[in-house]
Length: 120
Image (tube, rainbow, N blue to C red):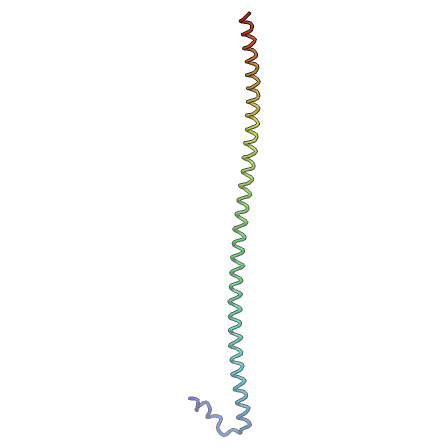
């Protein structure tokens, strides 16, 4: 097959043949360079896709962390409200205990007074 490709060159001058050879060499060189650049382009596109995926994953992770943070903030707020309610309830109960303690002391004094009266 290569003889058919070379057949058209028959009868050409050595100078023209030299120029054809130089041009064919240049074409081969350009084809190799094009293949290398194509490979570089594909490698860069693959790296770009990988970076895009990484950015997308990080965005998703950031969104997840933001939602988790929001949830934790709401939980903290709820716990703070519960703490305040419990603290208020404790104050109310301490107040009730103090009132009942005062009533108990008053009742004890009344009992002592009544016992003193009974003894008389």
